[in-house]
Image (cartoon, rainbow, N blue to C red; front, side, top):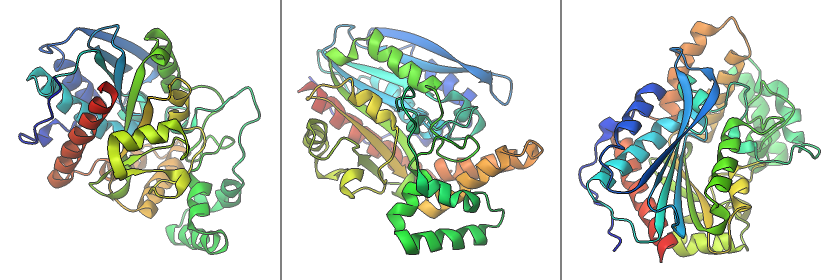
Amino acid sequence: MFSRFPFAEIDTQIFPASYQSARRQWLEQQTDLPYPCQHLRFACAGKGPAGEDLITDVLWLGEQQAENVVVLIAGTHGVEGLTGSAIQTDLLQLLARGQPTFPQRTALLLIHALTPWGFAWLRRCDADGVDLNRNAVDFSAPLPENLGYAALREALFAGDAETRQRLFDQFSAQHGRVALEIAISGGQYHDPAGPFFGGQAPAHGRRVCETLIEQYALSQRRLAVVDLHTGLGPYGYGEIICDHAPDSAGADVARQWYGDAVTLPLSGTSSSVPKTGLLDYLWHAAMDEHSCYVTLEFGTYSTDALFEVLLRDHQLWAQAENADERLAHSLKMRHHFCPNDTAWQEMVLVRARQVIAQAIRGASF
């Protein structure tokens, strides 16, 4: 019988200081789990700041033949893995104590540090500047165009924040705020140094997901995928964002499982605007009409603040001589995407327990 999560004993000390400490803490939780386990490791090219190897770890909990699978993804956007790792660690600690117990025929698939290079270096992207959450496009076809991005490219790399904001305001006045956000963050495929670059070939995290879908025959199971993100929306709130088409079976399932809290970018009800090449789309292709994929997005600071901290990050990484300044800026990246605020961290863990419980219940009954 499925049991709900307890909402006591919230331990914010599990929010990690780094990729290394996150991975060590996550691995340590696997020793006392009362379920059959399979651990997979996917090595990523490159090294971390301390010369550490970069690994995406995957843990399957439960019977191999389970009909239902709850997939929990941390670190699609590298630096956001600080929070995603804490949520997964919290879940593993609860499972070790028997809270919750999983229903029969349901397994759990944890994907930890899907973009490990960005996690280690406190960036959203990988070593090639690729945003994994814009990478799920058909690279054998002509790549999508983002004319708004091209129009704003000079403004994005302006050295003066006031100048940049003035140009953004002009674009927004002419085309609207939604058009501005799509131009900046909707995805672009021709500027590797710029933000929200979708790449020109499948990235590490996409290849990991494709391997898991095939290896575990996930297209033959009911799936509840929850992708953990931070940095957009109201402070401390976990928004359930559904990028299925509004009139699709996936959107219907999301509303059945998560209720009226579900928001849809394509309907204009989300803090997120529609985007190109989302990781969601890769998983959508493997899902039947009884499955769904949602992003659980924990808000921090304003969208303008998000753009500012990201644009400065890309500016600094485009200039090889700015190593010391890049290191200092990485602390601002950490602050935006994982605030060192006990109240925020408590809100995140409580909300994550709630949504994971909804996913388990929805996929299992």
